[in-house]
Image 1 (spheres, rainbow, N blue to C red):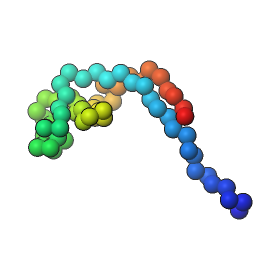
Image 2 (cartoon, rainbow, N blue to C red; image 1 turned 120 degrees about the vertical axis):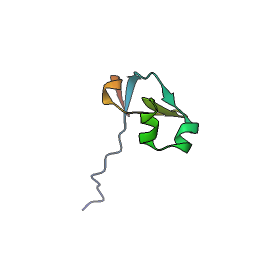
Image 3 (spheres, helix red, strand yellow; image 1 turned 135 degrees about the vertical axis):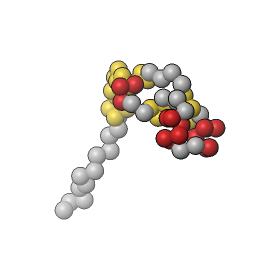
Amino acid sequence: MRGESGANSSKIILNCYLRVNKLAGWDEYDRYSLQEIRSMGFDGIKLDNNYVVYDANQIKIVGRDVQ
């Protein structure tokens, strides 16, 4: 070997639109399980700048950036 690596260091950033009606936050996330949050009628969770959605149909990819 010549010191080469098969590791890939590029990142792909997806630009997306999310379709959500009712987002849980830190209060719900700290108190309940993910299944409990979903059963309470939430269709996603927003924690700071991170989002969790329960259904892939809620996500629409509008662009990609490779870095």
